[in-house]
Image 1 (tube, one colour):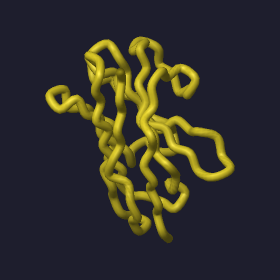
Image 2: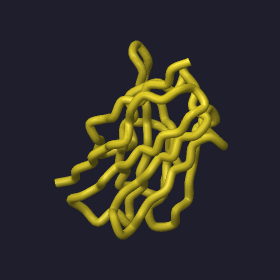
Image 3: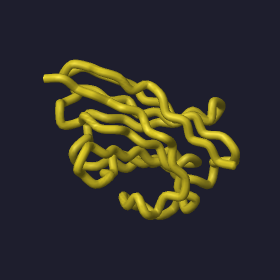
Length: 125
């Protein structure tokens, strides 16, 4: 059974940084892609970033490009989201997700097969 467990959320001032972690278990993820999404109250779940586990190829939403970095640790089976220069509009619950089709370059939450429980990120102004 696939399990994705996020951690690292919290409260930070605007301009600050946080690193989110997503510990993945229950599968061999080398053929997967992993994504980060976020959702704030009253809004739809929004794509943030994606990484192909085997190659490390990344893909970002325009709103976070140059501020956020997605990476993975093959030994720890963990995906990270380094978030720098945080803004109040980055406030949301952040979710980790796994896509069994690593080849497709997708930002749609419907294309992901497994989800974590989410971690809250709050950026104060």
